[in-house]
Image (cartoon, rainbow, N blue to C red; front, side, top):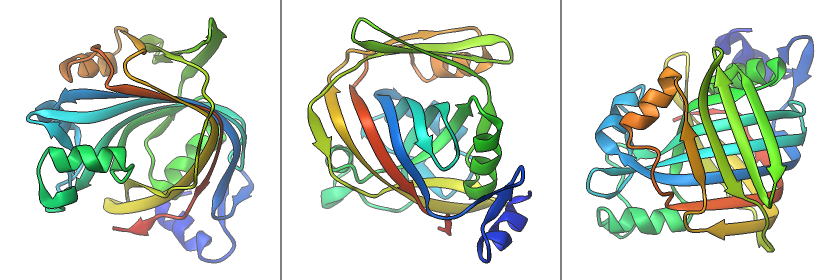
Length: 254
């Protein structure tokens, strides 16, 4: 189903993919995830943006915010699947940071969890969620090999695309904190037009850490781009969520 046809269908009975109907919002009832935030080369990051409406967020001159996340969706309207997200923190061009102050204001926005993201790559390991995620939101999903391993209090994710190793990421598991519901914005392009999607997550078993992540890059071209961004390097921070729930709304024109 094309994006335009899917959007038209959603106004009436829902989106249909592979003979299954998806109604909005899409609910995630249980997932676990590990996310790592890095500072990367802002010039290279800007070169990856698909349109003129967005800009990467710098918290130091020439240093943009970038996230790698691994998600195990155990109970989800789109199925049981694994996912890896490679995303930049962004804002609309001309949008001012908190306090109206460059860099420091972006740091405040980051810790307030008020920054939006644009997803550069979003590999998954199941075809239905790939088709639905691309058709509904314009997310850049592709079906790839994603393997998770839990050992020694850590989760390790290995991503292979086109038969080539992209990355292996290991993060600490565990935490006792809870996160209340807080809406987040993700930008994407549907039919060449910028859209925004609101996702509202909540979680228990949450742990935060400074550094603590291990990243190994492979020989895939995406790994080469990650090297151009300045990775691997020490992580800014990592977050683990043992039991995560979320609600994804329908996309809106931005």
